[in-house]
Image (cartoon, rainbow, N blue to C red; front, side, top):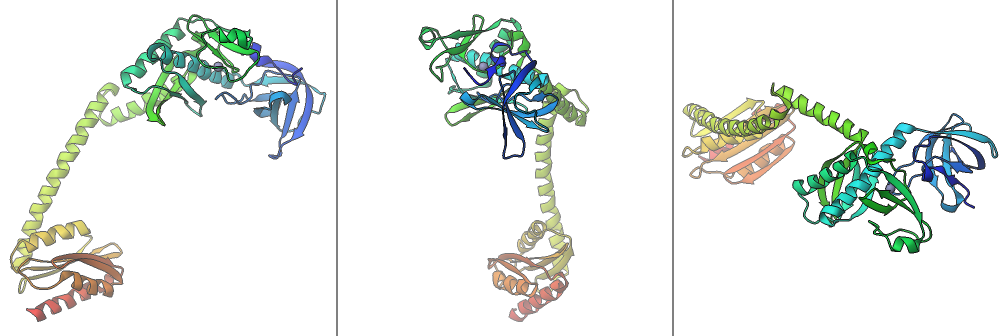
Length: 400
Ligand SMILES: [Zn+2]
């Protein structure tokens, strides 16, 4: 005689029941676990999370399948004593949600078998969506959507779902979708004319109750295809979320939802083109600036300190400068709390810029390096930047 009569086996829609408390134990969490002589609460198992609800108004936060010891009802609050008669109430919206996901999984899994001979290896109900891992080696949008379409047709045909209890010998003669995980009497779930599989979960009465199935995404994972899907109320919740996102994006383009992807793609292309043009203009500007700076430079040495100019911009200017013969560019920038330096020389000018930059950066409490003709660096002592560059100018002039 089992410790707990599992009422959910015979009626997945039963949410109110009376039972007697047969055991009370304390949990390490500080909560209490009750075992009842009968229960409508489904415990975590088979990829389906447990029910929640109340026992005599006390919150049931989780139910755990303890095998032959029965179902543990973990309650948060004052637990009824042993032998007490309690009124149980299962949270219906959570049960309905789980039934829709779980029954939806039976249907979707069978759709992949029917169309592509691709069995499901595992199933998980997660917070907002579900996953199945399917032996499908060549997934594509078309293949996935064909299975989704078949699954939804089965849902909308509103087929009956029945429970059959059979012996393992009887089961061996039946076309089961998957091998039973245990021996002895088996509980089979039959979707009229479509699917027959052993399962201990809670299922809809008819396929119509699942509402609909939608696939959110899929990917290849560990040799299988992992498919993320939503069924029933989750499909509606997901549609609302997706619709909101799509409408928000569309509003940015002052267009309708369906036209937004094309406009977004167009904008990305324009953005790339603008960047190309900006880079070309920056180079032109650097050339003009270089010519101007060289006009007032003494002995081909351009020494300048700018405000708020980044390393990339300094380098562009340096390149434009050393395109002129016998030129040395000693450029600095006060970029917020950092001093930046770029030293460069044309191929026919003298001096090792990597040595000069190391010395200058050491003075600024920083570091620098590079090649003899082009080097860069920086330091924290922004206040010493002018001084450091002046000293390098002196060194360069001495060499000339
Ligand atoms: Zn099931």
